[in-house]
Length: 481
Image (cartoon, rainbow, N blue to C red; front, side, top):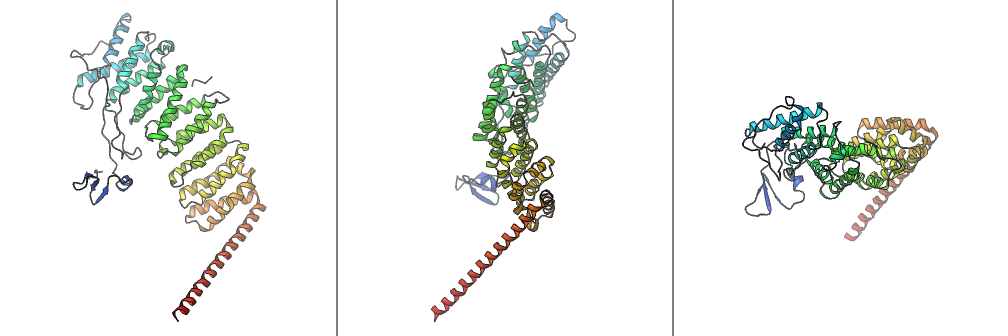
């Protein structure tokens, strides 16, 4: 059982060659795979758009405001509430903010009144109300989302498209949320209308570029997951499908962070021992999510989910750490910093016996990171020695860890270009010396001896090349004679 829980760049086709693009000051081939790197469009703010809708219910000519629910007799409240919900199923054109103002205000006022009435009244969620509220949600929220403006769109640099109909849509989501959270909510009645198709359409909306909408969707889906036990496996399976498509096909989906937030709560409610399908989800879905270029948009939520799994089942630690090391970003320093941060979060909760299993591959990687010329990578790796729990684990395994790390640390303490890194390295070497002074001295002597041998080999190599150059000159002079 689970718990409840700037100015655009002008780019035109060349009249001479249809396969070439004309850019101010340069001409490049449209098939050039490096085109996006050569032409970096300036940051632009995308306009608000209304989403396309397959069914647009236009209001009738006699569309007018209805009486207030508070001033209506109790026996007539249900009938009036149904009429107000019907009013809220009509859709208005928000592409022009100056048209249909009266109708928009009537609908806004009706939504606000429904929201307030559901929040403060008891016994109003009768059986006929359920299908009508959910029909209103479908008509207003379930729609085709506007496309991303061109392939150059970068979610980290460009402003997202905001939903133009948000003044109404926000209230629709608020009504739906209060409906789900109402003490009078009857799951047995609601499950006739909130089914797999409804959930699938709700999940598709997570691709909305509007952060406000995704925040509402996150809360609503979490409530649905908590109340409908029969839909839990289906919701997890569909989220799994979204992640796999994102990783292996599109690498484009706006709501990955929000879905991971929901999963963090779901994972926290998993019963022990973990089912095989949950372990497979961790290894086959969550770990591959680390290799996507847009990792920074959801890394914190992803790391939280991974740590939740390891807290549930520490035996998964070795698989997770080795999976991260296999996907290690060798040419992206910003991602390296994120990976190092996640590794430290894992080490914060790792069991000592699990640490022994991963210490060799882990510290071989860390020895490369502390040697990085990118100071943020080197600094983040050296911060591991500021963590008291990690330091205690290192102290228990000093022989292995110091032997792996010593050469890199000693070398960069003499050679690194950044003085802050050198200071951090001195502190780490000091801690190693306090842990095991005898081993420290042995490794120091071994390092110096190896360095002398390397310098001797280098000198011999240079002498040999010098003799070869001398013989070449002698042979050339003899041949000229």
